[in-house]
Length: 114
Image 1 (cartoon, rainbow, N blue to C red):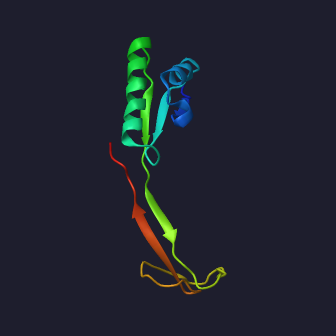
Image 2 (cartoon, rainbow, N blue to C red):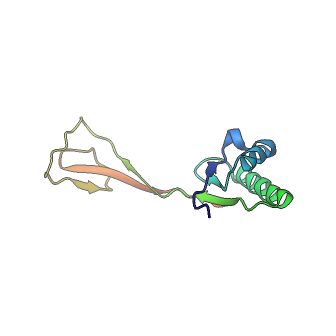
Image 3 (cartoon, rainbow, N blue to C red):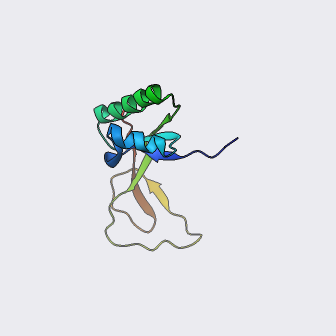
């Protein structure tokens, strides 16, 4: 029994029915959809292509939705800083210029729903 699976990202270069069919014939087991990129209609189109090809060729290619998780962005600094080993640095969500002691950051959740 084969336990290895081939996961292929379905992106701009692999969005046509012909290309996805060739990927399936070459051994694709899972089609990965990156929800951080592309419009919902483009993602739905890829989903429908995979489902129709599964039905037509009696395949069971799965779909994997790669959701974007937390994204942390460091804020502005007045000047470059040097982080030293064992030195305490505080992370803050306050709108300040970063210093050797305090680093501002922004936490974003950016999930696109279909």
